[in-house]
Length: 379
Image (cartoon, rainbow, N blue to C red):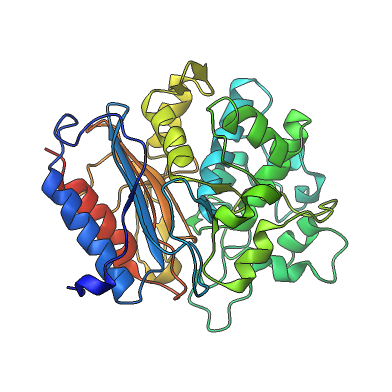
């Protein structure tokens, strides 16, 4: 337990109901605060924030800790902006499904029919479905196979005429459809597919077709100058990510890790999924697309990424499914390197969003433990 002098200041955001009205044990919120404040006091987290809702009513919305790594930093606030990294893939998957609903793409479509780069003996059988489910074999994320000297896929862009050629260089680690291996490069390819199928640049498509209809007023690929002081960063290199005003001609879409957002904006996407594709009077997906995205789409697919050893891995269309935790079977969502996540539990009509930024490489209890405490309060 941390000393009273080390306790961070708690800041509360907008709520619609009390925990009791939502069928949630208020004492577990105290446990959640103690868990997160303790990790901040131990130096394992810089700050933390969370939002939880049931039946569409927000009953917990709180932040604590410091907005930045700098001395004298202001506090993280409930509406502070944070780069979501791989939570961006959630948005990308929604964009792909929207285009499928419009008849502009289909799941078993060969990527080569959209991107000629894939029209090779090695890549011509890779499908949109395989990119969405990380079973394509396209450049898995660095360290996925515990290689001692991992290289980020975008580092390989040097020396190539274009980024797609760089992504497809070298052998595939497995035959498409054979194994699961998480691939941010594969989602960059999906972003390019969104651009070509829609005729709208990927980043603009996500903002215009997903963020704006859902009322996400603090979600951006490039943070406006007047909001830069409200962005949570844990290191100097993250500061540069906020100011991405460079010419992006010829560069990969930021479909795997580019969005900045807030607790409440991320919650809106989770609640949209729980609502069957609608939020605030806007429909961005059909109920059938939501059902397809959130059920297991794999059968007999193996994985060994990051030291795992599963012979029948489960994954939705762009969305992770519940791992062995106290979360209800059928829970789905996505997490990101920025130590954030959106989780949806249809059985409990429950949405949980969290950000737990840290400057250290990995603090597993900040994510796994936080989710466990969150679910423990459901009555």
